[in-house]
Image 1 (tube, rainbow, N blue to C red):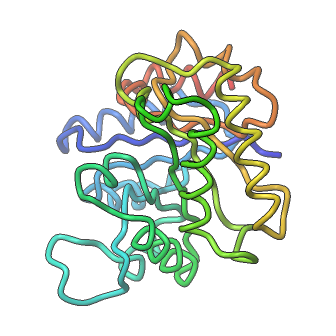
Image 2 (image 1 turned 180 degrees about the vertical axis):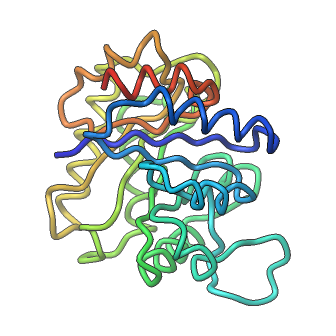
Image 3 (image 1 turned 45 degrees about the horizontal axis):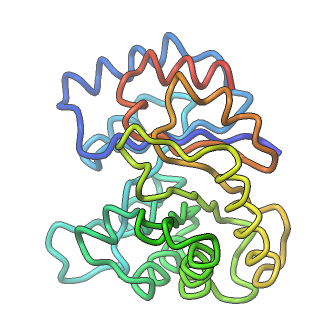
Length: 242
Protein backbone atom coordinates (compact mmCIF):
# COMPACT_ATOMS: atom_id res chain seq x y z
CA UNK A 1 0.00 0.00 0.00
CA UNK A 2 1.21 3.50 -0.84
CA UNK A 3 2.52 5.45 2.15
CA UNK A 4 1.04 8.84 3.02
CA UNK A 5 2.75 11.90 4.47
CA UNK A 6 0.55 14.84 5.43
CA UNK A 7 1.93 18.25 6.35
CA UNK A 8 -0.37 20.26 8.65
CA UNK A 9 0.99 23.79 8.66
CA UNK A 10 -1.75 25.02 11.01
CA UNK A 11 -1.91 28.84 11.43
CA UNK A 12 1.62 29.58 10.27
CA UNK A 13 3.49 31.49 7.53
CA UNK A 14 2.73 34.77 5.82
CA UNK A 15 2.51 35.07 2.02
CA UNK A 16 6.23 35.61 1.52
CA UNK A 17 7.15 32.77 3.87
CA UNK A 18 4.71 30.38 2.23
CA UNK A 19 6.05 31.16 -1.22
CA UNK A 20 9.61 30.46 -0.01
CA UNK A 21 8.35 27.27 1.66
CA UNK A 22 6.85 26.01 -1.59
CA UNK A 23 9.94 26.84 -3.62
CA UNK A 24 12.14 24.89 -1.21
CA UNK A 25 9.85 21.85 -1.31
CA UNK A 26 9.72 22.11 -5.09
CA UNK A 27 13.49 21.87 -5.35
CA UNK A 28 14.19 19.48 -2.47
CA UNK A 29 11.46 16.82 -2.58
CA UNK A 30 12.40 13.93 -4.86
CA UNK A 31 10.28 11.06 -3.54
CA UNK A 32 6.84 11.02 -5.11
CA UNK A 33 6.46 7.26 -4.85
CA UNK A 34 4.25 8.02 -1.86
CA UNK A 35 1.27 10.36 -1.42
CA UNK A 36 2.39 13.80 -0.20
CA UNK A 37 -0.40 16.07 1.07
CA UNK A 38 0.11 19.72 1.97
CA UNK A 39 -2.47 21.35 4.26
CA UNK A 40 -1.68 25.07 4.51
CA UNK A 41 -3.89 27.84 5.87
CA UNK A 42 -6.95 28.18 3.64
CA UNK A 43 -5.81 31.54 2.28
CA UNK A 44 -3.00 29.69 0.44
CA UNK A 45 -5.05 26.89 -1.11
CA UNK A 46 -5.58 28.68 -4.42
CA UNK A 47 -1.90 29.59 -4.66
CA UNK A 48 -0.90 25.99 -4.00
CA UNK A 49 -3.41 24.81 -6.60
CA UNK A 50 -2.18 27.29 -9.22
CA UNK A 51 1.43 26.13 -8.75
CA UNK A 52 0.41 22.74 -10.22
CA UNK A 53 2.97 20.85 -8.17
CA UNK A 54 3.01 17.10 -7.59
CA UNK A 55 1.74 17.51 -4.04
CA UNK A 56 -1.87 16.71 -3.19
CA UNK A 57 -3.82 19.48 -1.47
CA UNK A 58 -5.74 19.27 1.79
CA UNK A 59 -7.72 21.75 3.84
CA UNK A 60 -7.20 21.88 7.61
CA UNK A 61 -10.91 21.87 8.39
CA UNK A 62 -14.31 22.23 6.70
CA UNK A 63 -17.75 23.21 7.92
CA UNK A 64 -20.33 20.54 8.70
CA UNK A 65 -22.74 22.23 6.24
CA UNK A 66 -22.49 22.75 2.50
CA UNK A 67 -23.51 26.41 2.54
CA UNK A 68 -25.31 29.06 4.52
CA UNK A 69 -24.92 31.55 7.36
CA UNK A 70 -21.56 30.50 8.79
CA UNK A 71 -19.30 33.52 8.96
CA UNK A 72 -15.64 32.60 8.60
CA UNK A 73 -16.27 28.97 7.69
CA UNK A 74 -15.37 27.15 4.46
CA UNK A 75 -17.51 24.38 3.03
CA UNK A 76 -16.55 21.27 1.10
CA UNK A 77 -18.59 22.54 -1.86
CA UNK A 78 -16.35 25.61 -2.02
CA UNK A 79 -13.05 23.73 -2.16
CA UNK A 80 -13.96 20.44 -3.85
CA UNK A 81 -12.27 21.52 -7.08
CA UNK A 82 -9.07 22.39 -5.24
CA UNK A 83 -8.74 19.97 -2.33
CA UNK A 84 -8.49 16.21 -2.44
CA UNK A 85 -8.31 15.87 1.34
CA UNK A 86 -9.71 17.50 4.48
CA UNK A 87 -8.55 17.11 8.08
CA UNK A 88 -11.54 16.59 10.38
CA UNK A 89 -11.77 16.09 14.12
CA UNK A 90 -8.30 17.37 14.98
CA UNK A 91 -7.88 17.61 18.74
CA UNK A 92 -7.34 21.36 18.48
CA UNK A 93 -10.76 21.69 16.85
CA UNK A 94 -12.33 19.38 19.42
CA UNK A 95 -10.81 21.18 22.39
CA UNK A 96 -10.67 24.85 21.37
CA UNK A 97 -13.78 25.00 19.18
CA UNK A 98 -15.72 22.36 21.16
CA UNK A 99 -16.43 20.18 18.14
CA UNK A 100 -18.26 17.01 19.11
CA UNK A 101 -18.46 13.63 17.40
CA UNK A 102 -21.84 14.32 15.77
CA UNK A 103 -20.49 17.45 14.09
CA UNK A 104 -17.39 15.56 12.96
CA UNK A 105 -19.62 12.84 11.55
CA UNK A 106 -21.47 15.47 9.53
CA UNK A 107 -18.16 16.88 8.27
CA UNK A 108 -17.15 13.43 7.05
CA UNK A 109 -20.45 13.15 5.19
CA UNK A 110 -19.90 16.54 3.56
CA UNK A 111 -16.46 15.37 2.45
CA UNK A 112 -17.82 12.25 0.84
CA UNK A 113 -20.66 14.14 -0.85
CA UNK A 114 -18.06 16.37 -2.48
CA UNK A 115 -15.50 13.67 -3.33
CA UNK A 116 -12.98 14.82 -0.73
CA UNK A 117 -11.14 12.22 1.33
CA UNK A 118 -11.56 12.92 5.06
CA UNK A 119 -8.59 12.50 7.38
CA UNK A 120 -10.27 11.61 10.67
CA UNK A 121 -8.15 12.43 13.72
CA UNK A 122 -8.62 10.45 16.92
CA UNK A 123 -6.58 10.22 20.08
CA UNK A 124 -6.56 10.24 23.85
CA UNK A 125 -5.55 12.83 26.43
CA UNK A 126 -2.81 12.26 29.00
CA UNK A 127 -5.51 11.80 31.66
CA UNK A 128 -7.04 8.92 29.72
CA UNK A 129 -3.62 7.48 28.86
CA UNK A 130 -2.73 7.32 32.55
CA UNK A 131 -5.89 5.29 33.31
CA UNK A 132 -4.64 2.39 31.20
CA UNK A 133 -5.27 0.59 27.96
CA UNK A 134 -8.92 -0.28 28.62
CA UNK A 135 -9.83 3.40 29.04
CA UNK A 136 -7.84 4.26 25.90
CA UNK A 137 -9.71 1.54 24.02
CA UNK A 138 -13.07 2.78 25.29
CA UNK A 139 -12.27 6.36 24.25
CA UNK A 140 -11.01 5.49 20.77
CA UNK A 141 -13.93 3.13 20.15
CA UNK A 142 -16.39 5.89 21.02
CA UNK A 143 -14.66 8.32 18.66
CA UNK A 144 -14.90 5.82 15.81
CA UNK A 145 -18.41 4.58 16.60
CA UNK A 146 -19.88 8.06 16.90
CA UNK A 147 -18.34 9.44 13.70
CA UNK A 148 -18.62 6.44 11.37
CA UNK A 149 -21.51 4.19 10.37
CA UNK A 150 -21.42 0.56 9.38
CA UNK A 151 -20.78 0.27 5.63
CA UNK A 152 -19.81 3.91 5.28
CA UNK A 153 -17.55 4.94 2.43
CA UNK A 154 -14.54 3.27 4.06
CA UNK A 155 -12.58 2.91 0.84
CA UNK A 156 -12.20 6.69 0.90
CA UNK A 157 -11.07 7.65 4.39
CA UNK A 158 -7.83 7.98 6.34
CA UNK A 159 -7.55 7.58 10.11
CA UNK A 160 -4.88 9.59 11.93
CA UNK A 161 -4.01 8.48 15.45
CA UNK A 162 -2.78 11.56 17.31
CA UNK A 163 -2.37 11.14 21.07
CA UNK A 164 -3.22 14.59 22.42
CA UNK A 165 -0.41 14.45 24.96
CA UNK A 166 2.15 14.12 22.13
CA UNK A 167 0.94 16.92 19.83
CA UNK A 168 3.39 19.81 19.80
CA UNK A 169 4.90 18.75 23.11
CA UNK A 170 8.09 17.14 21.85
CA UNK A 171 6.87 13.87 23.36
CA UNK A 172 6.22 11.02 20.98
CA UNK A 173 4.46 7.78 21.73
CA UNK A 174 6.76 4.75 21.77
CA UNK A 175 6.57 2.20 18.99
CA UNK A 176 4.96 -0.29 21.37
CA UNK A 177 2.34 2.25 22.44
CA UNK A 178 1.52 3.08 18.83
CA UNK A 179 1.40 -0.57 17.78
CA UNK A 180 -0.93 -1.35 20.67
CA UNK A 181 -3.30 1.43 19.59
CA UNK A 182 -3.11 0.45 15.92
CA UNK A 183 -4.35 -3.00 16.91
CA UNK A 184 -7.24 -1.40 18.82
CA UNK A 185 -8.17 0.77 15.84
CA UNK A 186 -7.91 -2.17 13.42
CA UNK A 187 -10.14 -4.23 15.70
CA UNK A 188 -12.91 -1.63 15.64
CA UNK A 189 -12.56 -0.84 11.93
CA UNK A 190 -12.85 -4.52 11.05
CA UNK A 191 -16.18 -4.60 12.90
CA UNK A 192 -17.75 -1.52 11.34
CA UNK A 193 -16.20 -1.33 7.87
CA UNK A 194 -16.49 -3.22 4.63
CA UNK A 195 -12.77 -3.07 3.86
CA UNK A 196 -9.52 -4.03 5.56
CA UNK A 197 -7.38 -1.51 3.73
CA UNK A 198 -8.08 1.69 5.66
CA UNK A 199 -4.84 3.68 6.02
CA UNK A 200 -3.92 4.57 9.60
CA UNK A 201 -1.35 7.32 10.18
CA UNK A 202 0.49 8.46 13.28
CA UNK A 203 0.81 12.08 14.33
CA UNK A 204 2.38 13.45 17.49
CA UNK A 205 5.79 15.14 17.48
CA UNK A 206 7.02 13.25 14.42
CA UNK A 207 10.39 14.75 13.49
CA UNK A 208 13.78 14.10 11.87
CA UNK A 209 15.07 12.37 14.98
CA UNK A 210 12.33 9.78 15.35
CA UNK A 211 10.62 9.19 12.01
CA UNK A 212 12.96 6.41 10.90
CA UNK A 213 12.29 4.48 14.08
CA UNK A 214 8.54 5.10 13.73
CA UNK A 215 8.71 3.75 10.17
CA UNK A 216 9.46 0.31 11.60
CA UNK A 217 5.93 -0.03 13.00
CA UNK A 218 4.00 -2.63 11.08
CA UNK A 219 0.64 -1.59 9.60
CA UNK A 220 1.49 2.11 9.87
CA UNK A 221 0.54 3.83 6.62
CA UNK A 222 2.37 7.09 7.19
CA UNK A 223 2.47 10.31 9.20
CA UNK A 224 0.47 13.44 9.89
CA UNK A 225 3.20 15.94 10.68
CA UNK A 226 2.69 19.27 12.44
CA UNK A 227 5.60 21.26 13.87
CA UNK A 228 8.33 19.45 11.93
CA UNK A 229 6.59 20.21 8.64
CA UNK A 230 7.05 23.97 9.15
CA UNK A 231 10.69 23.63 8.12
CA UNK A 232 10.66 22.68 4.41
CA UNK A 233 14.15 21.20 4.63
CA UNK A 234 13.18 18.88 7.48
CA UNK A 235 9.95 17.90 5.76
CA UNK A 236 11.82 17.22 2.50
CA UNK A 237 14.27 14.90 4.28
CA UNK A 238 11.44 12.97 5.93
CA UNK A 239 9.61 12.63 2.61
CA UNK A 240 12.72 11.59 0.67
CA UNK A 241 13.78 8.99 3.23
CA UNK A 242 10.34 7.50 3.80
